[in-house]
Length: 202
Image 1: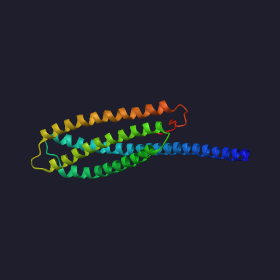
Image 2: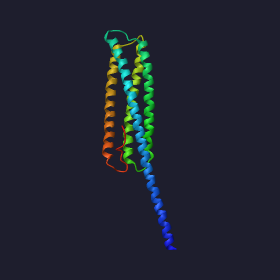
Image 3: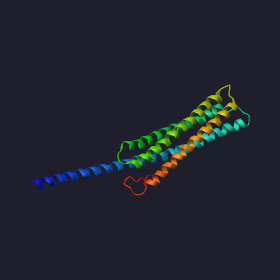
Image 4: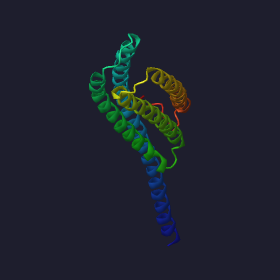
């Protein structure tokens, strides 16, 4: 009877251990899916960001050319250019939200500290990127209103642009630091441990 009971207990313990191990494996697998999903969305956001940057630079370059000639900026032309820019801002906002949602799912998982550290770093990167994006968007919106005003002041515009440039530059440096930190985490943790993130794609 005791032997039979010991055998049953042994089977029960083996099953419990197997279930526990399976649970750990699932957590790691889910964490990997979340961070890889977030990275894929960030890659898509980067493409949109490049397009947005090109259009904003073109818009401001045209404005700068008008001002350098001593002309009052063409408000209608600027407004037309802003229509395409607003759509890209919205797309980028959605991509950032999607990436944050994917990275955020890692926080509730267990035994995946490496993934959590990586996901938190990416989340911080996105948050600062969003702040920078909002600064630029607000400036462009104000610029559009100012150009249409009869009180347009080129000197005030130049001063505001200078202040914005410094702020954006600081935030861009923070974003770059966080991107480098995330890459460093990936390299450091990619040593073959069960929670290795060496397979994460940028």
